[in-house]
Length: 119
Image (tube, rainbow, N blue to C red):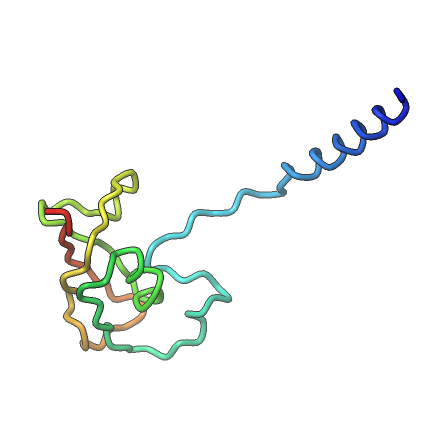
């Protein structure tokens, strides 16, 4: 019985040893900057800013605005919601600068204007 327990513990130890080892930490994603090999690779620019009015901020950034250079998301009080990751407000996009439909280059800054649906 002790032999079986030893084998089970040794196997569990080997499994756990392999689970936590990672050669390098994964770098954090920078908003508006596409990583090589992503859906943004090979896109032709300029492109028009898509209409995202009424879209939740996270959905807009991870969806239609994924390949655009989003430099700020301005809340009604003037602070940049992108620089406040602990804030759990469900921001809604109310507009963009430049406006939707405007052709922009890949590196041209795009600012999002936000509202708080809870207020």
